Length: 223
Length: 251
Image (cartoon, rainbow over all chains, first blue to last red; front, side, top):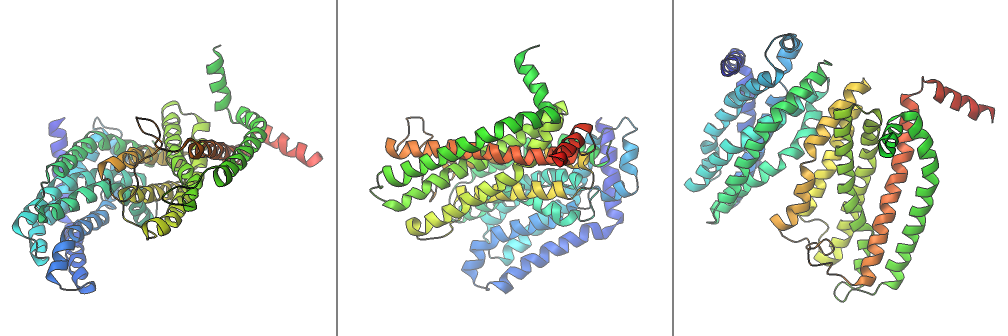
């Protein structure tokens, strides 16, 4: 089981690494959205510090949304997903490996870039630390929930916009806790509760979402 | 056979459902009309004015029942989705799909009346309060469900996909309910559903409960009518629908 998962994970990572636009485009998208907000609002230090956490979180949400649409598509179009149905590998394992690979190659780079963006928004050291902790706990939930939506919209032509409508409302709790944490720490308040809730959401979705995703994949493959 | 089990099987068959709903519709329609009229009279004329909010609190008789229903319908939707997925019951999917549009409407009514109520009371049409925001998110969930169902060509796949989404989204309903306690902000706390009994004048409370019941029956009525139409479309090729149509034509 573990070695199967690991091999699937490596395969998906390699697949993404060969198509570098898969990784770089959402990342560029993330940086560009973050840079547009000061242009649209103002370069006021105070204002940027207040909105920084929220803006970075929303940008992460949207960039992950862009990548999620692709998470199963290549394998679906090549017929690989259907082949998996005839092997001992369950679609739950396939989904879990794909989500993990997607997280490593799309969310992790954004978490690493977050301090740069945080500095641009004049966040202080504590806020940046909390932002990164929140992103580390929150983005797996986003990837897991998003994979359900990606699996549901797999065989639709206009899947992209629909995926956003289906999944973005479900992302709201993560956004509330994650961005709330950054502003709470800015006011000197403790953030243990938000961290615990983000952790709970992550483990909750980790234990349920892969099954929902594999069920949705089977349905989309009409199996 | 067990009476309940028999009833369950009868409801599961589209043809039996069509018969049962034909008998139910007049009852649902008239009872809900009478209850809504009675509650309107009690609420608008008999109930006293609020010592703080004056007469403008009376919008509660539309706002609160709609808000209750918006959540209740989502639960109905998710439960029928689960029944459909687990027992492959045809009618469960019909109930699920036909609940989505009334649910979205009640959510819309709750949001609009809430906004009309908020303007004189809080001095604002909209506030990013946790409860209001959750209700808005519920609206998006309904829209997502309707959009997902309509984007498939094949009904079988559409039903299952929508059911999965409904079950995934049902996690939002408890969040709405407990949000008042979690992030208590501008929206007043619950006055009716409290452990130590409702904190409301009885003359104000009764019309609210009657109205809520009337709204519930009205939902039942629209659900039956929508489900009947859906059944007729789905079973258009079956002999009973065709004989039904020929009977109508002969009359």
